Length: 275
Image 1 (spheres, rainbow, N blue to C red):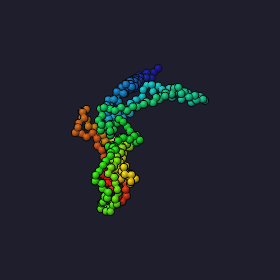
Image 2 (image 1 turned 90 degrees about the vertical axis):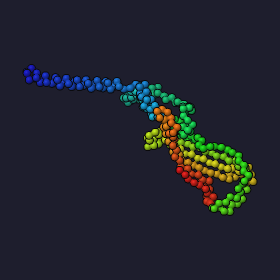
Image 3 (image 1 turned 135 degrees about the vertical axis):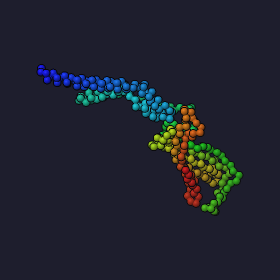
Image 4 (image 1 turned 60 degrees about the horizontal axis):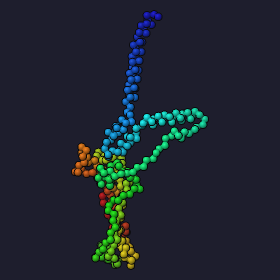
C-alpha cells in the first residue's frame, strides 16, 4: 500500500468515527425517548392532576379514554398478525375467542351530597348528562281546590264590551303542570368562556288551568288556560376562590325567552313575550 493510500485512509477514519459517534448518540436519544413513555398509572395520575375539578369530569374521562394499555397494544398487534396470516391463506377462519367481549356497565346515578340543590336542579356541573327524553319539574306543580264568593260571570274589557253570562260555579279545580328538558349541552364558543363550568339549553313548558269540575250544568268546562313555552340558556359559573365557594359570586346565569298565551284568538286573545 502506497503512502497516498495510507494518508487518505487516515483522513477517512476520523469522519467514520464521528459518524458512528453521532449514530450512537441518536440511538441513545431514541432509547431515552422510549423510556420516557409513561406507564398506565402515570398516565392516569396525569389525567387526574391535569383535570382535578369536579367541573372537568368530561375532560378527565376523555383523558382516561385516550390511555392505551400494554394489553390493548399487544391485543392489537396480535389481531393485526392474525389478519395478515389470514390474508395469506385461502380460507379465512374467524377467531371469535380472541375478540374481547365488551361487558356492559350499569350506571346508577347517586346524589352527590357535595352539590347544592341549585347545582343538581340545573346540572351546573358535567355530572348527570340528560337526554331530550328526560323530563324534570321546572316551576311548581300543584292541584288545588279553590272557592270564591265573588264570581265574575260577565267580564268586560275595551276589546269585549258585551260579554254574556257564563254561569260559573264558585268552585274551581286549579292545577299547574311545569316541566323542562335539556335540549343541548356543551355549547361551542360558550364552553370556552372563562369561569364557565357548563352550558346548557333547556326547553320548558308550563300550563295553568282552572277547571269548572263541579259545574255539571255547563258541561264542566275549562274556563281558563294559560300556556307558557320557554327557552332557557343556563350557564354554570365557577364561584370557587382558592378552593372555597364564595356567596358573592353567582353560581349560575340564566337567560330565557318566554311566551305566555291563553291560546284564544281575537278579541279574546291575551298573550305576551318577555326576555
